[in-house]
Amino acid sequence: MDRPAVEPVAGAPAATLDLGAERALAVADYHAGIEVGLRYERGVELDSNADERRRRLLALVDETDADRVVVLGDLVHRIAEPGGDEAAEVRDLLDALESRGVPLTLATGNHDGGVADVFPDRIELLPPEGARVGDVGLVHGHTWPGAEALSAPTLCMGHEHPSVRLTDEVGGSRVERAWLRGPLRREPFLEALGEDAADLVWNEPELVVFPAFNERSGGTWINVEGESFLAPFLPEALVDGEAYLTDGTRLGPYREV
Image 1: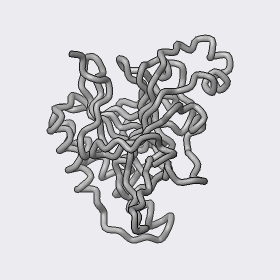
Image 2 (image 1 turned 45 degrees about the vertical axis):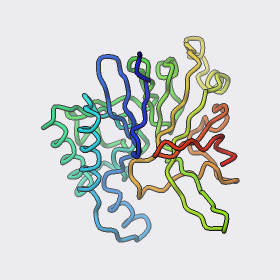
Image 3 (image 1 turned 90 degrees about the horizontal axis):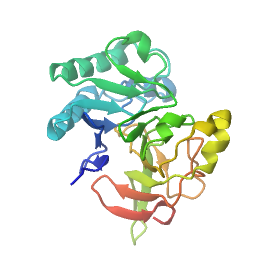
């Protein structure tokens, strides 16, 4: 039996990807150095969670026996060229992965503009419009995916940090990270691609929006009225999207949760 192209890891904001020649562990929105960013952006002082983030990712690499790690954008937090603690966190992660013989591929996100300059030979960078590897399209989601990524039967993205607000019968509520999945509509992409639309191969793709790996990065409450998406093609391009918790619980249509 063929294994699925994208298979969430139970209890984790991560999935394995069948990339044909390789089995990859994929996460989105790692946001290395977020504590430094929060200090400058909001005046919030938090102890660094860098070591724990690295341990969690490495444990998932070992658990899934992954040949490669794919980060669906925003490996780093600050939009400027990473330096100091932020660069040190990425360097420690790369050292640990390389000691296991596991390379890292990054679908360039809106926070990753300086990564190539600091780590020119240690990270495989995909362009902002994404790319296709095997039957999987890989993109961050902050800009319109290109025709290559959209040609894949499955399109994986981050950027949204999807979360659901759950309310119990006595009025208490909690917020949990979630997966968002559903088929894509072709029409919005035809308009956005312009002349390139003539080359668009359409294989009725399913969109898989990953929860953020970094639990300190906030998110889009996908089931709350008035909350807007960050990706330029959402929600217009998403058909019948459903939400799932990271433990595998199916919540149903995301707007009805």
